[in-house]
Length: 199
Figure 1 (tube, rainbow, N blue to C red):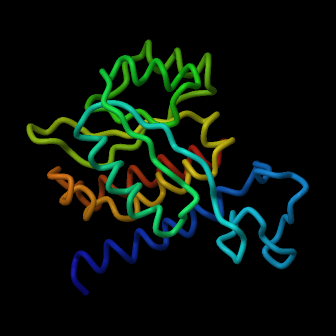
Figure 2: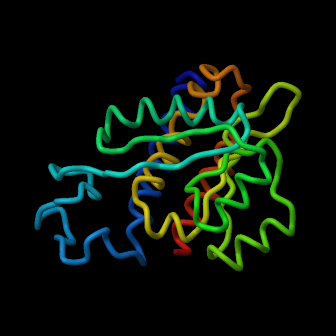
Figure 3: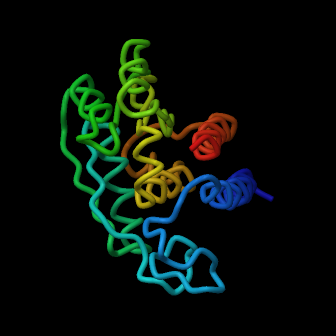
């Protein structure tokens, strides 16, 4: 088995686990909707025959991260045509401020969050979730940041982030970024699963 095939197998298992964990502790987008695949799936949250996910995911931040998110959004839209990704460049500090104040769904950043930024997101949006998905030239991390509040309320954001993690190597190469190692991707997947389990 090639290294890529092994990586894809591991990511598939982790992705399935994350989807199972994702439903724990959260209500569906419409609480009156069916709650099991056997009862129907009008929102598509179970991946069945429902209408699927809908909404616009607002993303802003560093150009390196935006390119990756735009590519992921293009491909994710093929699976979930009701989801659009609106991406715009912005200074990282502005993107994080907008994210933590609820005016943005995902911030694409090229550096770790500061302690003050984490504290602000904790106070306003129930904490930040940082997913290191690639490295920019020069070794700067390309990190997608969302909040627990957004993950709790917006299934389409969760879906896009999981899609990005599942296909991070290809997306990074297409965006002209350095893909992460298998261990680094495992760490990102674990961080995402822990965030989902906590909401």
